[in-house]
Each structure stands twice: as structure tokens, then as C-alpha cells.
Length: 472
Image (cartoon, rainbow, N blue to C red; front, side, top):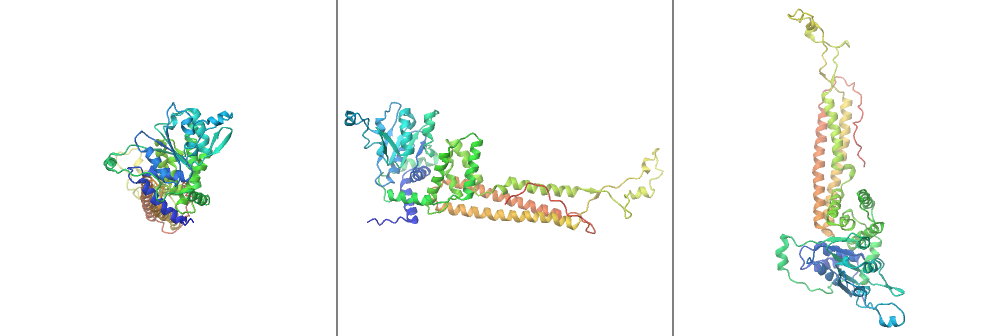
């Protein structure tokens, strides 16, 4: 009788133990371990791109140990490889009966986890056969199709060739992970590490575990905020001429659901989108660009992004400067233009050297500072008060998002730590920028309060300051 606890908390605990066991003895390969495991849980394939000797095959062998009873297949391909190496030899008995069939036992069609090294060095006949097997989990064997128990394939390559067949095959790998040599900081640990045994692990997952996870993932929601960011990224990539197929977007959504379900969540979080760089971009440069964009967008609403908020604050500052420097014509009590008092008294009459009498001409005094009524100033400060209230709300929202990110990263199984650090740094910088803009808005408010005032309030309510509206 099966007494295994398959509840969501139990699965998360088992995955935590499993990930730690898979990472043991590997140096600077946490990202690769976690993402290859997540891809396998989602029934997807991973391509490791990097030079030889960077533990790519070791990663695949360890992944095999994460699945109880899973058959493993491994092969290094060359340009001389033949289909028999992957799919099995031809059946002589079948040939005698005019059937073209293969013995697939022990070969890729009957494997659950497979590692195919230098995968793009295979000829087009092999790659075309692999296309169906990877995507449909079926293998054309003679006149019929054979169902395959394949869970996940780990492919490895130094580079991706640019031809039509290779591009179609490349698209079958949902995750494309660049693998680089160990850094200088990790070199000593690499030399001192102890070899770890590869095999079934204590918390290895069986078919029932995977079926339960798939059922939970099917119930996970994609919130509107997540869908909006996915659509925004899709449009951005399309605008840059980078095509991501509809099939790939569907698989990405499924991967996000599995990530959430494996942690016992009922909805995908915006932070889960940190998985996207390895799904939508084909190489390290493109992945870095997507990661930068995501880090700048996650948790920051476009309506209150610092550049947009800056333009609003600048509009108030410009209006304050204009009203401070505004001058009016000066009128006397009778409503007539006021002239220079000295000239009006005739004190300059008869000055020497003024043959044309220019010095005796009356001049208007036009340097009187404009004064403003209480209603005008009150309207201006009310506008800024409304802006300050919205800024305060946004600052509170940013604080909540930062706390949410910290709580999520503490419990999440799959995040890339560099990406989490980058996202938190962006949120922190945004909070500092918004706080600075709040100070500027407060200074503008104080400036409107200090404008010279009319003795009697006859000022009309001013028109609202023209600036880009802030959406909720």
C-alpha cells in the first residue's frame, strides 16, 4: 500500500531535499540544476550551450537520478552518426517478413531521461526523427508509431548552426542555458570538491508524483498582471524582429504554472517571470537584455515609473518658475498707468544736455511683481497635494512589492539569485528616485505658498497645469 504523502507541502519539501542533493558537489551550477529539473517536471527539454568540460553530461546524469525507475540514455553524436545509434538496430526477423522495424529496447525511444551531446552534429535524417520524438513523444517504427515514455531530453552543444532544420530542432528545447567555465572565485572549490554518487535519490519522484503535479499545475491561474507583462514582452520582442512562436508561449505558460504548483501556489507570481530569459531568447546576449527589461519592469507600474513621474513634477516646477517671474503693469488708485514718481513731479525738468527733452518724458513703471489670490494659490497647492497623495500610495506599493519579492525569493525553489538581486536593486533605486521626486513636489508646493499675494482675494481659479496624466 502506497503511504507516500503527496500533499503540496510534502512535494515542496521533497523537491527542496532533491535540489540540494542534485547540487551537492557541483560548483556554480545551481541555476542549471534547478532549471533542468523544472523543465523535466513540466515535460520540457533543455539545451546546454557551452564548451566541453563544463559538467553538462554530469547534470544530465544527476537529473536521471531525480526520477525513480526512469530509463536513461546517453549518446555523443558526430557527423558520421547513424540512426541506429539513437533509435536501435533494424530487426532482422521483421525484415524477413518485409517489415522495416527497429529493436528500440535500451535506446532513445524507450528512455525517460536522455542526454544527447553535440546534438546539432547529427545529420538531417536524425534531427527530423528527433523532432517528432521530442515534441510528440512518439517514434515512427516501421508502419506504426511507438509511444515513448520520454520525460525530458538534455541536449548539449558548443554552438547552434544557422540552418532551417537546426532552427526547427532548436525550437524544441524550451530552456536554452549558457554554461560557462567556473569563475576564478569558484576555482579552488572546483579542485577540492568531492565526487557525488549518481543514482536514484531518496526523494526521487515517480510517475504518480509527476501526474499529481501536472494536475495541480492545470489549476494554477495566470493573473492579469502576469498576462499583461507577457503580452508586453511579446510585443517588444516582435518589434525587435525576434519571433517567438505561439507554441513556445503556450509552453512557457505551462512552465510557469508548474513552477507555482510545485511550491503549493494557486497563481503564478510576477516574480516567476524571471524564468523567461532562458525561454524566449536564443543566446546569452539576448537573455541578458530580457533579464534587464524584466528587472526594470517587475513590481514597477508604468504609470508611476520615475521617468514619467519626473515629467509631472517638472511641469509643476516650470509653472512655479513662470509664476514667480511674472510681472504686471502697475496701475494707480484711479486705474491709470502709474508713472515714475520723480518724473511726474517734474524733478528732472531742465536737465543739462537734453536738447530734445527726452529726460522729461514720462515712463511707465512695469517691474511690479505679479500678485496672486488665495484661490489661485489654493488651487495650485491642491493639485500638488493630490500628486503627493498618489506618490505616497505608490511608495507604499513599492514597499509592499519589495517585501513580497523578499518573501517569495525566500521560499521559491526555482529563482535565479542574480536575477532576484537585480530586481530588488531596481525596486530600491526606484524607491529612492520616487522619494526624491516627492521632495521636489513638496518644494514646489512651498514655492506656490510663498508667491506674493493680493491684498483682497480677487484671483480666479487657475487652469490645471498641463502634464502627462498619471493613470491608476
